Length: 529
Image (tube, rainbow, N blue to C red; front, side, top):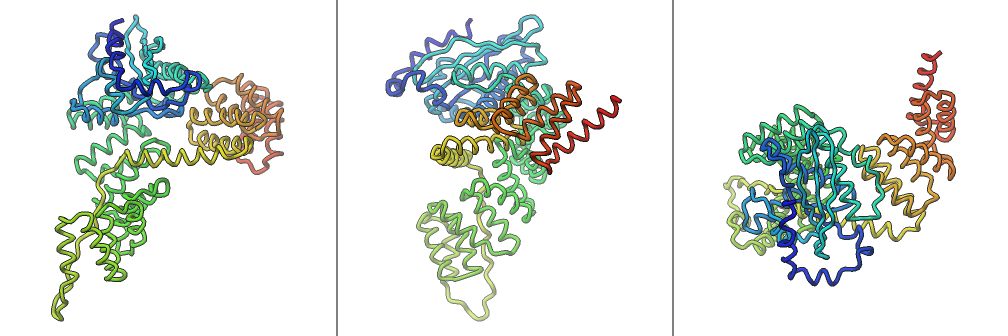
């Protein structure tokens, strides 16, 4: 097909990455380790302009699934940044020949290129993986379905591509399909149009339609919040950012910009709470600084927060400026002068700091009124790169701590993390960690019980029963008994369901879930009689 015609040209751009290719290990050793991905917009092979929006829809879905599978995909913002870095317009769509140059700019390990087309009433998506270090293109993989199942088609394609990039990846295809099952296609289309339209009013119109169709659609709320914020509609922006789920990958950015929106709206108490929520996850300097500004605007002492901000990034003049103001207001004037001098050392031409230092050093006359001091400085932009780097460092630290544990303790920790993901509805992440726990210690009943819960949620009832029984062969498990209880109740095996829930209650008498299931079984049994 013509969609792959540029592959030869792409592979010609190899000289600058030859060293990487030579230094790489074998395919087996590399499997699953080179995790940074770039998914390019898919080529529209339908011939229908009304389906052009799917070009951007494809990377949006694939990026989300790859991230859940443990990869690090570059999102649309990253891709547009790379285009700007190369001096290309934002509406530029990379050719296959320029894909490798783009990948080098972002230093990615794999590029996904693909297309979509119609076959009768069916929809077909096809893609290949270019392994950048090895300069090798995979065979094409394909997924098909009805047009109204477009999201499931791309979920299925994501699973197939993941298996190419990591042959040992064991998460079931049903789990990928479940990840997108709750997303309405009409809302998704409006969201994609809302992030890709060149006209701002059209973007807002589409995004408002997306959230009207799907009120819990976090990605659409995030995009709408950005549009409102850029238009200085701060109250509307704060409201939109507040509706981004804590489980969303943009939750910290949403919290940061919600805090800014509230600051600009004069809602300082709420702004403080928003910044504090972000700081609990990632206490970066800009977050701590803005939290300090929100505290200070309430008339409280924020010196401690400004000290933390300046310590986190001692080379930022604004943090020393804010600390100087706070120390002067609540502490030692000598220390305030020292901090202001540090600000001017970092930024000698800071006129506001120069005038303030001169005012502080000027002799005080008896009849002079109280000088009006400037306001603390707000960090007005979210450095997504810094947040990602900090998050990556935290992940690496966690991985190091896990590696130092015994296999059993590591498995217990992984199973605990997986259960947290499961309780938040993140099935793909949960299954991946449960499988890692099982690999670390196959005798851990919690891993099998957790997998049973995931299989039940994704609709693979046979596999769910098998995993629950596997858990019980290893150790009594209330979670495994509850899975069996729900399965037996669904199959109308009420006596078995009653036994299952009774066993669960013996192990965990206070379980609200077990008690609720027991009541449901009794109610159904009563109706049957």
